Length: 350
Image 1 (cartoon, rainbow, N blue to C red):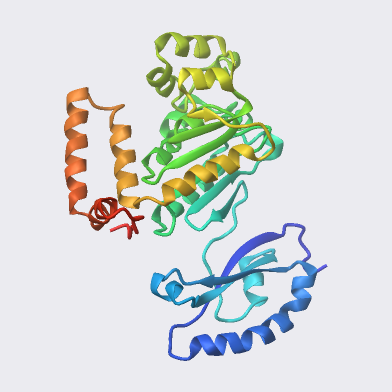
Image 2: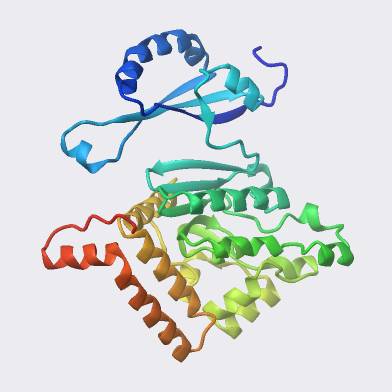
C-alpha cells in the first residue's frame, strides 16, 4: 500500500500558470511531459486530472482564444504534506479536507455543500457545524460564487442536533459554552443559500430558499426527548406558519409531509420525483440567481430578511433606501440600459 494509514483524504489542488510573457506557451509545451510522468499515479487513482482552468475574460472569449490559468488535480493522500510530495513544486492548495461535509462546484458560480454523516443521518454535531460554517464563509468570501446549495442525502437532509453528543451535557456547560449558538452564523451569510432536502427542519429554516423532494418530512420532535427546539425552530416556524400550527408541531412532535410543508409556506415548492432531482433543481435555481448582479441579489436578500425584524413602515423605508443606493452601482446602469436597448445585460458585480 502507498500509505500505512487507512485514512486517505482527497485534496483539491490548483497548479497556477504564472503571468510572465511566454509562460503560457511554455506551460503547453511541458504539460504532455508532465502528464506522462504522472500517468502511473493517474492509473492508480492517486491523482485524478480535473482539466484546465481557463480565463473568463470576455475579450479573449470573443476571439475564440481560451487563456489557460492553471490546472486542476485531485490528490489522494493521508496528509497535505504527502499530497504536496506527489506533485510539482509550483502547486498550492485552495482548500483543505472536511470530515463531515463535501464541497463541490457543479456550476462555475455555485458552491454545493453536502452534509456527509450518512450513518448518523447527518445529525448536526458541533464538528459538522464548525465545518459547515467555515465552508459557508469561504463561499461567501469567494467573488466567483453567486449562490450556495446545501443538501444532505436522499434519506435525510439533517436529522437535527446530535442527541448522542448532547445527552450528557449539563446546564452550566451548555450556558457557558453557548451551545448551538453558532448555528445562527449561517443566517449572516450574504449570498443566497438554497436548501435541497429530503427532510429536516431547523437547518432548512435558516436557508433562503427551500426545495423539497416529494417524500420529505418536516417536524420538531424534540418534545419526544423531554426538551424543546434549541436551534430556532419554534421562533422561525411561528413567523412562517403562525402560532397554532407551530404549537401543534412543537407540542406533539408530529411530522408533516412535503405537500403540507408547501401548503403552509415552509418550502418554496416540491420538485418532481426521482433520485437527485431536488439537487438538480436547486442547482438550476442557483444558476438563474448567478446570472444576476451579485450586488442586487445580496441587497434583495437583505431587504427580504428585514421584513421579519421590522414593522411595515420601517421595512418600507429600509427597502427604499437600499433601492436608492443601487443607483450608485454600475450593474443598475447596465441592467436598465440593456432593458432599454433590448439586449441581455452583462453584469460585472460592481
